[in-house]
Image (cartoon, rainbow, N blue to C red):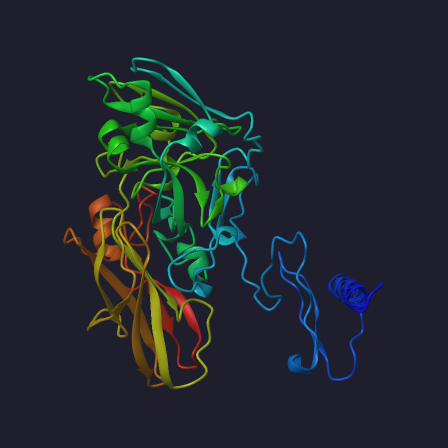
Amino acid sequence: MDDRTLAATANTERMRSLRRRFLINGTAAVVGAAGTARAAAPLGAVEREVPADATKTQGYPLEDSSYGSRSQFETEVRTRFKTATPASSWTMTPLQNSIGIITPSGLHFERSHGGTAVIDPAKHMLYVHGMVKQPRKFTMADIRRFPSLSRIMFIECSGNGLTEWSKPTMKTVQGTHGLTSCSEWTGVPLATVLREAGLRTDAKWLLAEGGDASAMTRSIPMAKALKDCLVAYGQNGEALRPEQGYPLRLIVPGYEGNTHIKWLRRIEVSDMPFMTREETSKYTDLMPDGKAVQFSFEMDAKSVITSPSGEMQLDGPGFQEITGLAWSGRGTIRKVEVSTDGGATWKTAALQGPVLPICHTRFRLPWRWDGKAAILQSRCTDDTGYVQPTLGQLIAARGGALNGPIGSIYHLNAIQSWQVANDGKVSNVHHY
């Protein structure tokens, strides 16, 4: 061998040795050298030995076929709401740890009615039929051939905050508001797919059906379908996650989360809504007179302070940045106001760019805490002029008592209150 070959061989062996050493360190409980520490690895991260001085230690090598993992020091995860069966439940996004406006795909909230479906994209088809000129079956390859687009949009479950109507129940913002997340979605305009099948002029509604065990179905107005709906196969630069509807999901901008049908397999076109189980016995808003409001699709403007928020601990009087998220299913957030005295006075917060329609918007306000008890609140206004209501105003509109049951459990977008105690402990309270 020549010198160059020998050097290359030696370097390869050195890298293999390093790789073996770091793989062992990442998977076994190895006792570190004096002056080192270890951090427990969260789900999705590899636990590695922590050197006393990273500048004096060779870093671990790049993997040949690694997906990549976050730091072992980042521990935020989704939490599941306890239901009778985990197959029909939801997990909530840790908004208290959120940065910016994009939710990592692995932390996007989940809502499933029949568990997470496992579907082979090579065999999956989207069937379009009903009031069309030519029923069509589209393979995933067919869908991907169409011109695509990407949009950053939030999705919010209409049951977000359902535990909070009568009394403060969940302790953290993850529990009170964690059924909303914001992603970049990539796919094909639904209008493109529908027009390929040839819509009849009298078509007014469509039924979207999922390919999961519950065969989740919702009726969507045709005007909305043609306006801005998206048949998505991508999320945040990669394929949809299984729990987000892999390989195909319907995105209905601004509408309640259950209309964003996951594992999309069928679209039936009609001249009227289908009145399915999910839009009759479920996902309706009961009113004081006993009637139910159906098809209350759009998510009203809403905001919440994510820091300081429930279960956090302020470390003493002085500067604190108040930050949070605001969103509206009807358009763009134009203003967010923050109160530190339970709504007696309000200050306008700064909106951190980008500020996009039907998207989470981050707001910020500097605050100097004086060490006394305080009530933190936020309220937003969107570009339609809609102002986020108090809980009292919302209950008055829906019926029921402030401290008793009300008819509806959906669409709670009331102002959230966080109480800061004298010792700096933050808790969830109702403040009218």
